[in-house]
Length: 178
Image (cartoon, rainbow, N blue to C red; front, top):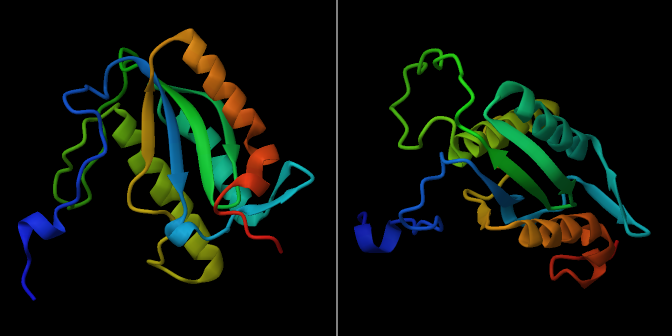
């Protein structure tokens, strides 16, 4: 079976024409590969991170130290996904990136939401696979969900959703009792 451009093309879920390098706040959800519950469990409405969940939390927090153009707001690591608010401010001056390591150039813009996620997800995957001795195994789904936060009211609602997410886990379609 050959490659059929119409059949095999991945549809973009990004907002058409939107510049993801411009200053703004974004609500992010990234899910695990096949929605496997890899990062811990919910106990009495509270997320109990396991070692992999701690890696996700640590890499999320480290991202703001590595990428000075972003600020992190509320976030929660769930058993099979992470929700977070990322504020992008590309005006902050950065050093130019160091080497492409022989890879083909990427089509995402530096200092963008896509660049942030392209650093975060592989960092988690690398560390999880080092522990499991499973190089190349996927940890995340290929894409992620993002939503442009348009005003303070929406920001407040999303913060509340993130904070209350562990209490809502049993109602989640991905919930599987132990």
